[in-house]
Image: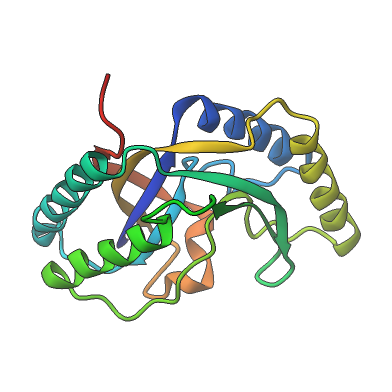
Length: 209
């Protein structure tokens, strides 16, 4: 069994439910499983190695960061930019977001703070800033024409939905992932065959009512 950790952003519940329903429809139409089986989340730090006994320290750092964030910046939000696709690695489709307006800090800056917290407790290799996006379909291995049909279908699913254009931040979550198929290289997508996960902890990014 291979283990990795991840740190993700979960948007407000009503928005997340809407994305989940759209994603279920898209994946079921094209028999695509890799995204459908995953949680609806926006990865900020993806698939990093962490010893299980170091995870509580990482989580404590995230708790401190989230408490400061919701105290000082309770109204940060993201706006969906549209559906984007990648043909490499079997073909994937994402709902992409952009930081909204002139708000500060941005979600990108929040990610930088998370990396700083993480490296003080559990140093990780340098990562490129990932695009702000939620997976709708991953490693689909569809024929090219069918994949393009799926991209068009996914775009139409959101164009025709009542999903708001923007969503506030909900939770910052620390996740433990397991896969028997991933081996030592999670960049190759072996995890798509049998991914399992456990949310270790969840930290609110907005003041609780």
